[in-house]
Length: 168
Image (cartoon, rainbow, N blue to C red; front, side):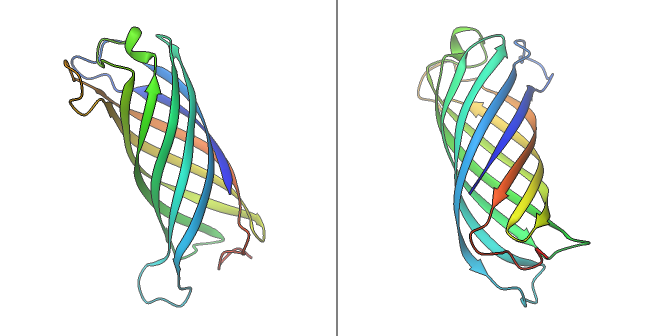
């Protein structure tokens, strides 16, 4: 279980004219599908997460509401920190399309991928720092479907019901 708070910013590339700035609150619940602390692979844990999306685009305006299916790959601990990579996609209901011509329609898909670290503050309790790159569009449901790309920085906290290996 956990939560993250993210700040997202639309990339400044051609046709991205709205300069979208958003803040997202993301409650999480997940399940460790595979956990092998003695694995010879650099990865030793695979998780599937459901991550809520409750957000606001304070520029140019609008809200975001949905859920992300996220796949997280944890690597072996390095100096008390656990690096990870994750990727997933969310289905969103948003009013951002009323203000940003890059997207059309209230239904959007929010695909994302990134990397981060978990720093355990005590067994089963970790601070999370993460960067994600994202793309938001309606997947061709409605035209035009330009979409936009952006970057997000997040900080969060996780409670692991079973202590993660390396969380000492």
